[in-house]
Length: 305
Image 1 (cartoon, rainbow, N blue to C red):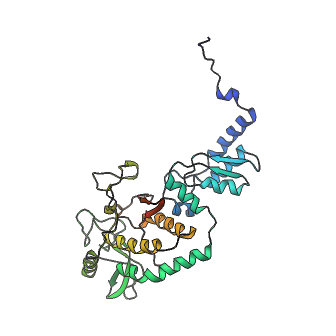
Image 2: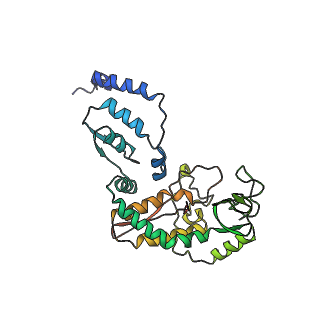
């Protein structure tokens, strides 16, 4: 038996036309930025997303028209867009069940009229209740909190550590310009502390308090307490979530219901407690499975625009 293994490089076995295409593609991609469209950034809180523009160049360079494209690591599904825009039939493989469910939901046909109807029903029912959680006053005039800067460790709301987003100790960004002073920010005051005390009495026992698996890549660390799901959100945000989640959970099963669930997950970054200047890409989610149905706990910050 011949125990010697003859080695032959992969390149020597490959089709010369394919090799030429790959080298030409490499040159084409050298100066192309991996720019992710805003709509994909908002919908997928994942690291390492790929630009559909890059996907289009790869597909056009390596395949012929009407070819079949296989993506063995589907991820956010950006190459689905690339394939569709270039008349290719697309097949994707994804190991993670949750990621697969997101992509399947986003890229399925949606009844936009039904989606708008159920969204507006939820908004009409809970808009005022949730907005009231963010109520503040400037010049004795009702306004609402758009962003609140505070020191989470010592709960310092009146004079948190200064940075460029806090001017003249004004650590609250207002939703509306104050009609009296013309400002869009104010300093945290006694009205705001009374509002926090009012909120503190509200029940959030249904909010998940799971311990997350440590992952330093996305800053889930035990020493900072970030491994506790509920510590990443204020009481105000927890209450807002529970109201909206309850409303969505009560909807009859439909594709549009699943879509709303995932939209809320995508909005999670807007309501977490975040260090000033930290990145917004964030994917802390807690999932419960019951009777083979996925119920996703999500957090969002309501935008009153």
